[in-house]
Length: 51
Figure 1 (cartoon, rainbow, N blue to C red):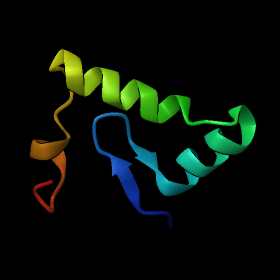
Figure 2 (figure 1 turned 45 degrees about the vertical axis):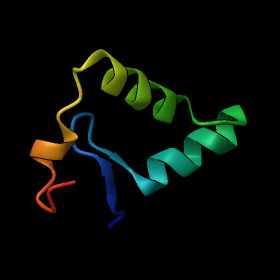
Figure 3 (figure 1 turned 90 degrees about the vertical axis):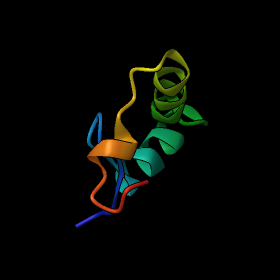
């Protein structure tokens, strides 16, 4: 099982790696960063590790 990167969208390390291979960059990470900037990311509270 791949480690979860984003608890809001349930993205894993494998998801990010596949996205980079498919697009030359990670569109998923761009989505995560845009969500954080917009204040709609709740990974810090959703992540059981607290980050």
